Length: 223
Length: 333
Image 1 (cartoon, rainbow over the protein chains, first blue to last red):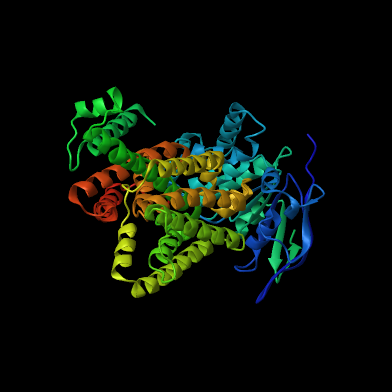
Image 2 (cartoon, rainbow over the protein chains, first blue to last red):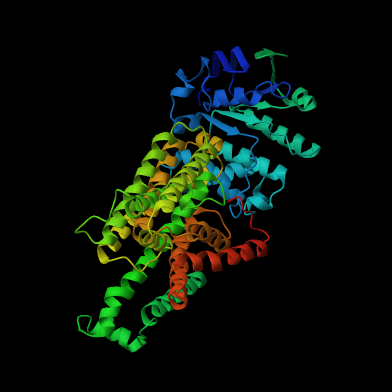
């Protein structure tokens, strides 16, 4: 299996009438690497993730993946390259954890058989160690369990990259450690590249292989 | 859908159909029903005439309109991720009301000569509903999210209501009575051509709904997640609005602005299936919509009260009871 091309940000700027959030940001996000992004509240970490995911068009510059601008790709094509976790809480009554993870396979429904998609679903549930909760409805899961379920759902998209906005929020200390170990394991063996935002410096120091900081609209490496 | 639920829904529907067909100002016994419907449908008897000219079209209108309103309510609650959304949220019902108000109450407009009043009223409602839908669809693309679209739909509703109020304040007694009577909703005014149009509208909307069914659950996760999971949110939103517009537009044109069913039945369906999954709720919602519409219409006939009075007056306390009883129910669909 060949290593996927990195995500390349070329002079990305994003400004709102009253505020400049990103200013001339250029960086590479490698696949198979666990990269952290830190920064104070309101500096634009989530916005940067949204730009990379193609949900927000930069005012200037471009996000390139596989030699193509992310904004030019269709949502379906983007979903095959990038999986995401946002901070919005999603608790749909009656939808089980397995149903949620299976939703992640939506982008492969035309190409794969339902047996293959079921296998992918089960693998992703297992990767996040959620087998015992598979039949539990989302509204009965704890915040931490739901967070892991959402990551399993993103993983079921089989993306080359995962963008995780504050994945350790809502988790207790033990659950944070477990999740970060799982994410690191996912990256290994040519797994997806993971870019996660966090305010937890202990977690970043311990697990991130590449550390970035967003400050005054610019991104700098802090390795 | 499990067998028990199928049995309960089937039995309830059968009972309601028999009540609808058999009871009223003239009682028709089950054996006479059998005679008139199956054995000699062409016999020139009073009962046969009552059945084929009045009660059968009324029952069919209730079934089709109830199912259409319920499913369009489900689509709107998913689109806006709001449990209070209903088919009227996009201003479709108020567009139909404005169309009828202009025709019936407007000074310069009168019922078109030579054309039966019900046809001109239905046409005005249909044109009003679709012009309003076209207006919403034209601007929907400019809105960043569903909340803004919801606010736009509501403001449009307020604006058209203001126009209707202005027309009402200047209308004569006779015109005002006609308009108010239409506004109370009724399944008893549909003829077979209108039923055919209603059925076609529902069928087309259902075909669209089935085509987008796998995307509907993803829409429940919100725009950010749906887009990053591969859903073209704008196209899906457009398809949902077209489907709702066709269903709500047809129902409002032929039966008047029927309230409550579209808002409440999706909640009852989710309570029964214990799930927000659209695949699990499609048949249940359609079927329950038909049942609730038939029940409300039958009570309305028996008590000689308007359909909307029964639907809202009895239905609202029932749904409140349901929501309070079901502790696991989370109003956020």
